[in-house]
Length: 352
Image 1: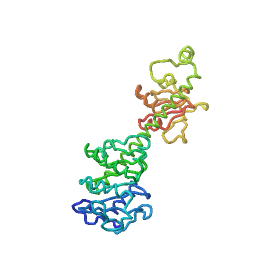
Image 2: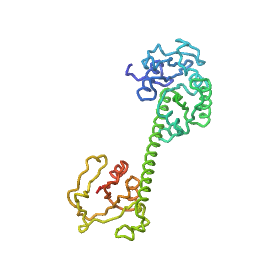
Image 3: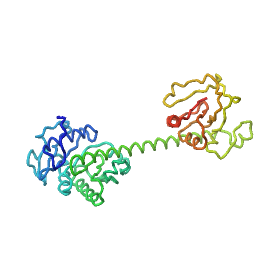
Image 4: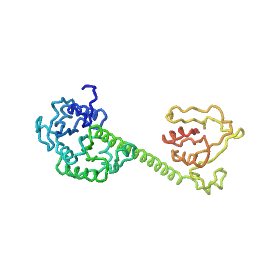
């Protein structure tokens, strides 16, 4: 395909077929559709140019200009074969006829938006570009509405009417079928489509991150709870020779103590209790501290009862104490999130 960029605006477009071909190439290039389907319709004056059926799966989007079908505003074929009109042809024609302000409709079998809605997560505009296009709450066709049906077409047209009344972006998500958008020209339609997918990608990863942190915290607390059932109670510990004292500080029940290391209070690196520096992403290359720590410094000690040291634990310690070193007992698991968080905060995790 030529590297020339065609102008997509209605007032300047002179090669609509080539513009459609380039547009669909961009859809593939930016993963906004796949090789199973997708289509575009472009209205120029009193004609509509639309991709033919099987443009994706049989022609791999390598279309020639004469493979673009031309119809009038009612969908009657002017150039090409009526049998080859895309299966979503009526959907495109209905939008372009009902909404004169739109001159381009774009459908793609996208990945992120249908995935997000299939998980029951609403697709709301949260990114800056989504707000720019006034993407607020994208309507979703009911899952029991058959794909490529007249009922689906009517549902999409109704949603477009509602979006227009609210002044929101003309976009509808069809579960397991993709996205349909409209714009005043092809540039706007493509940019809107890309904005919707980027916004859905952001929502997906945001929820994955929240879920992973929540799961990490839950298992950390479960582990701590199971361990506490096997450990002496704080009142018994206070009555023994152990230096642990219960207090109102968070995580004391997990034997996290505030200690000060001075010249006279050294931690010796004995064979049975070596001090290892653990850095983020270097768990398999622990470096043994070959000399005692002699510089006066403040540190926190995490006892064996903790079992797992998480980013949540680290945040709680840093919130209450100004420390740059945390000594973690041998056998306590340090989570990846904790290591990454420590590295970002400049806190050194020292494993006994």
